[in-house]
Image (cartoon, helix red, strand yellow):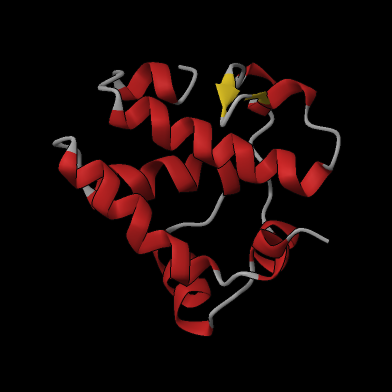
Amino acid sequence: MHKIFTTAFADVYPLYVAKLERKGRTQAELDQVIEWLTGFDAPALAAHLEAGTTFADFFADASLNPHVGLITGVVCGVRVEEVEDPLMQKIRYLDKLVDELARGKAMERVLRG
Protein backbone atom coordinates (compact mmCIF):
# COMPACT_ATOMS: atom_id res chain seq x y z
CA MET A 1 0.00 0.00 0.00
CA HIS A 2 1.36 3.38 -0.99
CA LYS A 3 1.84 5.94 1.80
CA ILE A 4 -0.41 8.51 0.05
CA PHE A 5 -3.41 6.18 0.44
CA THR A 6 -3.33 6.60 4.22
CA THR A 7 -2.44 10.29 4.16
CA ALA A 8 -5.22 12.63 5.22
CA PHE A 9 -6.64 14.59 2.31
CA ALA A 10 -6.70 17.60 4.66
CA ASP A 11 -2.89 17.42 4.88
CA VAL A 12 -2.47 17.75 1.11
CA TYR A 13 -5.33 20.17 0.39
CA PRO A 14 -3.43 23.26 1.70
CA LEU A 15 -0.52 22.31 -0.56
CA TYR A 16 -2.86 22.30 -3.57
CA VAL A 17 -4.23 25.70 -2.48
CA ALA A 18 -0.74 27.17 -2.03
CA LYS A 19 0.42 25.87 -5.43
CA LEU A 20 -2.58 27.39 -7.18
CA GLU A 21 -2.42 30.71 -5.33
CA ARG A 22 1.27 31.07 -6.30
CA LYS A 23 0.10 30.76 -9.90
CA GLY A 24 -2.70 33.32 -9.52
CA ARG A 25 -5.56 30.85 -9.14
CA THR A 26 -7.96 30.58 -6.20
CA GLN A 27 -9.13 28.11 -3.59
CA ALA A 28 -12.63 28.44 -5.06
CA GLU A 29 -11.29 27.20 -8.40
CA LEU A 30 -9.66 24.24 -6.66
CA ASP A 31 -12.93 23.43 -4.92
CA GLN A 32 -14.73 23.61 -8.29
CA VAL A 33 -12.26 21.12 -9.77
CA ILE A 34 -12.66 18.79 -6.76
CA GLU A 35 -16.44 19.00 -7.04
CA TRP A 36 -16.30 18.18 -10.76
CA LEU A 37 -14.06 15.17 -10.15
CA THR A 38 -15.60 13.75 -6.96
CA GLY A 39 -19.12 15.16 -6.75
CA PHE A 40 -18.36 16.69 -3.32
CA ASP A 41 -20.04 20.07 -2.92
CA ALA A 42 -18.66 22.65 -0.47
CA PRO A 43 -20.28 21.16 2.68
CA ALA A 44 -19.19 17.61 1.78
CA LEU A 45 -15.64 18.74 1.03
CA ALA A 46 -15.51 20.68 4.30
CA ALA A 47 -16.72 17.60 6.18
CA HIS A 48 -13.94 15.47 4.68
CA LEU A 49 -11.35 18.12 5.50
CA GLU A 50 -12.63 18.45 9.07
CA ALA A 51 -12.74 14.68 9.59
CA GLY A 52 -9.20 14.13 8.35
CA THR A 53 -10.39 11.60 5.78
CA THR A 54 -7.60 9.58 4.15
CA PHE A 55 -7.20 9.65 0.38
CA ALA A 56 -8.47 6.05 0.29
CA ASP A 57 -11.67 6.94 2.15
CA PHE A 58 -12.03 10.25 0.33
CA PHE A 59 -12.11 8.58 -3.08
CA ALA A 60 -14.11 5.58 -1.80
CA ASP A 61 -16.86 8.05 -0.84
CA ALA A 62 -16.62 9.97 -4.14
CA SER A 63 -18.86 9.63 -7.17
CA LEU A 64 -16.35 10.17 -9.95
CA ASN A 65 -17.40 12.29 -12.89
CA PRO A 66 -18.33 10.06 -15.85
CA HIS A 67 -15.88 12.05 -18.02
CA VAL A 68 -12.73 11.19 -16.03
CA GLY A 69 -11.58 9.10 -18.98
CA LEU A 70 -10.96 12.37 -20.80
CA ILE A 71 -8.19 13.22 -18.33
CA THR A 72 -4.97 12.23 -20.03
CA GLY A 73 -1.36 13.24 -19.84
CA VAL A 74 1.66 12.89 -17.61
CA VAL A 75 1.97 13.55 -13.87
CA CYS A 76 5.30 12.85 -12.17
CA GLY A 77 6.52 11.08 -15.29
CA VAL A 78 3.58 8.66 -15.41
CA ARG A 79 0.69 8.74 -17.88
CA VAL A 80 -2.51 8.99 -15.81
CA GLU A 81 -4.46 6.81 -18.23
CA GLU A 82 -1.92 3.98 -17.74
CA VAL A 83 -1.89 3.91 -13.91
CA GLU A 84 -2.95 0.40 -12.94
CA ASP A 85 -4.02 0.89 -9.32
CA PRO A 86 -7.55 2.39 -9.38
CA LEU A 87 -7.01 4.51 -6.25
CA MET A 88 -3.66 5.82 -7.43
CA GLN A 89 -5.25 6.67 -10.77
CA LYS A 90 -7.94 8.75 -9.03
CA ILE A 91 -5.27 10.59 -7.07
CA ARG A 92 -3.33 11.21 -10.29
CA TYR A 93 -6.50 12.51 -11.96
CA LEU A 94 -6.76 15.12 -9.22
CA ASP A 95 -3.05 15.94 -9.50
CA LYS A 96 -3.40 16.37 -13.27
CA LEU A 97 -6.38 18.71 -12.92
CA VAL A 98 -4.54 20.80 -10.31
CA ASP A 99 -1.47 20.96 -12.59
CA GLU A 100 -3.58 22.11 -15.54
CA LEU A 101 -5.23 24.79 -13.42
CA ALA A 102 -1.82 25.95 -12.14
CA ARG A 103 -0.52 26.20 -15.70
CA GLY A 104 -3.27 28.66 -16.52
CA LYS A 105 -5.58 26.46 -18.52
CA ALA A 106 -9.12 27.81 -18.82
CA MET A 107 -11.55 26.26 -16.32
CA GLU A 108 -13.78 25.04 -19.13
CA ARG A 109 -10.89 23.02 -20.57
CA VAL A 110 -9.76 21.75 -17.16
CA LEU A 111 -13.28 20.45 -16.54
CA ARG A 112 -13.36 18.86 -20.00
CA GLY A 113 -16.24 21.14 -21.03
